Amino acid sequence: MKDPKVYVEVIARIDPEGGLYPLEIIWEDGRSFHISRITDIRRASSMKAGGTGIRYSCVINNQSTHLFFEEDRFFVERK
Image (cartoon, helix red, strand yellow):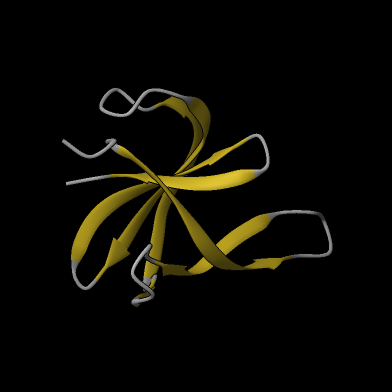
């Protein structure tokens, strides 16, 4: 079975106050997914994959998902 934690490349915007806002996720096979909306940003743990960081609750292709910023990189929970 594959690891439930998938580290991904992210294209993001950083505002003048230092806020980090992901715009697009690039999956491990090279496919990219535009984040249409961020509905929540908070410090949280991933119950499925383990790890703690800033959790971005996102809408991608009309599906809700969580993107985590853990120390210095992003990960998602494998479905």
